Length: 408
Image (cartoon, rainbow, N blue to C red; front, side):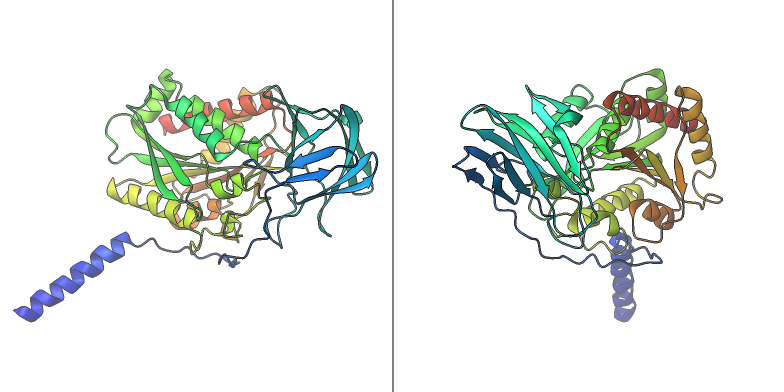
């Protein structure tokens, strides 16, 4: 009797443990995502006293590793990544000013093998504007810019700065007055202790509702993808008849900042563990991905729900949707073709740019497919796509997604 009882307890504990364990997902090309050392960015104000020029990286989202005088009218901006090897996403952000009002030139210096990617943006009176092309000079792969300086610091960045506090201010304002169906929580902490937020969105009973997952900011500089995420989520929450019907049928888990450490530290691509989090969707070495996967898994199990669609918002050189080729037998076998057709029919002169291929590396869209048999898409917006176009794309993609799924 005692032996049978002990065996029962062992089996019960094993069952409980197995229910709580998040399974790893196997990929054809594994990536080492164990924590790597970082190259420190020392926070300071750099001074060139003899020419009266000053530059600072003492703010969230900054990236400046040195300032050197080239001549009386030009300084060299030293920009290094958080560690190497790394994707060529040479991000920079700094404040610069001078003792007296004057034009001054700055040349970007990157490590060997890396080159300039982003057109400079200037923050003027709380608004971001792209630096005039007549103030940008390129010789071979070397880029120099001309800035009109004064005693008032000028913020210059590769992309608009949206720090973790900026993101928090945005989603706090977005969900104000919607708390009855947008359930906010911090589900975990980053390596450096920053909050990992999620918006859990549904109307009525949450049980048995199929789940759609939205992710963004795995890669810190990719803010055009984040802008599309903002418009996409805003459309889902607009209280239209379509939105109401959609949220009565489905549940959305929206993760507005997956890599807050990397964002605030001004990283080119990695988290505080020196790792590309969008290569960690296999064994979950990094806490940001591990906690996200655990949260999604726990939520679906607890509510007898199925994850059917995952969209991961990024930025690259052009607008493109990266999809998996495997569709038959998945949760939504016809969704991609139906969605892309609807987008082309509902946006003037719009042609979907699709790159299809099953994920061989451990990225999120592969995790959605191999881990959940779900439709996974990496939703990319071009680095230089105009904001009004991003807003239109974000709005229409959300509307057409909801229309398809409501009918499904």
